[in-house]
Amino acid sequence: MEGVSVVWLRSQYLLVGGITRLLMTQLARARAGEVTDAMERIAKRERVEPEFVRQQVANGQAVIPANEHHESLDPMIIGREFATKVNANIGNSDESSDLDGELEKLHTAVHYGADTVMDLSTGSDLDRIRTANVEHSPVPIGTVPIYEAVKRAGNAADITHELLLDVIEKQARQGVDYMTIHAGVLMEHLPLTDGRKTGIVSRGGSILAQWIEENGMENPLYAKFDAICEMIHDHDVTISLGDGLRPGCLADASDEAQFAELDTLGALTQRAWEHDVQVMVEGPGHVPMNEIAENVERQQSVCNGAPFYVLGPLVTDVAPGYDHITSAIGATEAARSGAAMLCYVTPKEHLGLPEQEDVREGLAAYRIAAHAGDVATGREGARDWDDALSEARYEFDWNEQFRLALDPERAKAYHDQTLPGDNYKEARFCSMCGVEFCSMRIDQDARGVEDGEMEAIDDDTDLENSAAAAVNRPPTMTHRSTASNGEQPAEHGETETGAEDSDPTSPRAE
Image (cartoon, rainbow, N blue to C red; front, side):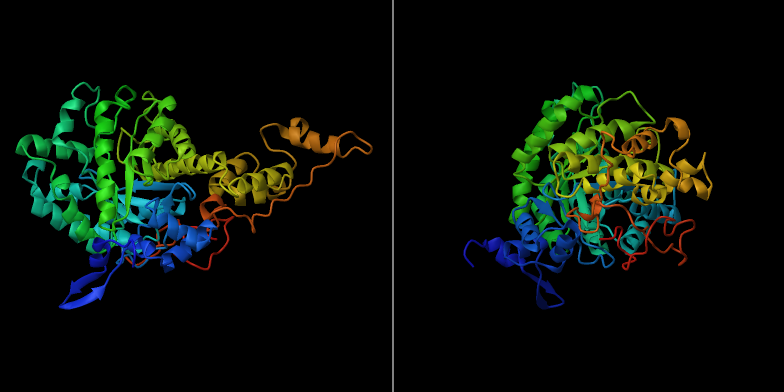
């Protein structure tokens, strides 16, 4: 087994109940040359060869967040050579939401196209909510263990190393697929934040900064990083290296504190890889448009191509209530520049806990950003979806337009507000221009003139055989989950324009 490390050899066996059993992470198996079942499934969804998936995972350029305890999971991949993914944050607080409410948010997130979901709950019933999310979610579930550690300790200063490890191990056993670990916030970095306008805006980063200040010791997540890697390796949990010193406003973007932490994250990426643990790296939240590409390129260089997972970035600070828009603009540029996953921002950002409609709005904005990024980078087949919808639009095939829309229900509802009758589904106009001034009708009529100068347009994009990945195809079904009382959640089911899919746990059809 030439080239295989001693660490890799040791990592293959785990003592359970006195019996040594074989256990390999997706990364270890990829390095050993194995194409796993998860890789086969991902290859089908991404429309690539399974061997390509294996190579990307083996090189650390992509991750497959897939805890062995997450039985309802439909495997997916995060990496710059694959379709850009979108994460949706949900979670409760002491002021809002309960178990049923969180399951409804989960359902809404997957229904509207979330590729992963992070449970950022900080309120009550943390274990019940986390367990229910894992049980019902077909997409990977992420968490931030430091939140639960604070809840259990009572305050940040009283967190112990043992408590942190206990929380991380418990969440791994519950089936969490990836965890944000803010191990890059070091004691030496904290003075670098003194000149900022908004200080430390990451919840995890601020908690750890307080712990460091009050205990006079190094970040416990950094101090115990190797122990954390060994622990989560046994469940194949992916580490998402948190950006605890990310900028919280444009004025603080690309500063010394942010990049000092990034350098530490680059070193931690290498250490995690030595344990055969999959790693992605989280990125900044507020960055001027002209600095986004530089930020992505810097992360890719410092972290040796590990997938970049960015929040936004928000390109302006002046639009509370519309930050799903300010951030989607930045997210599009980040995706074009090589970010692998975008963490959505909802209209409630900076203002309050998102509810179901906020989740829908945030996901719509970010699905657009991710798709636009894939089109801009020339992702194979990505534009076929756009072309198919454009052809339906030109042909006034309204039902096909609705079916192909990113949010079919919204598209149909807006059309029907002014022209609700079935007869208008075949009309050669909408209420924007009316029949007399519809440019496409005028163009069609002009092209229909015998012996005219312009030829008739007759295009037909074959979406069925397109090379586009699943996330760059029209949504064809909704997520079906079971509420905590065992009943189907109200007002959720197949969309009127959607088609039935054979796999009830799959968020998107092939």
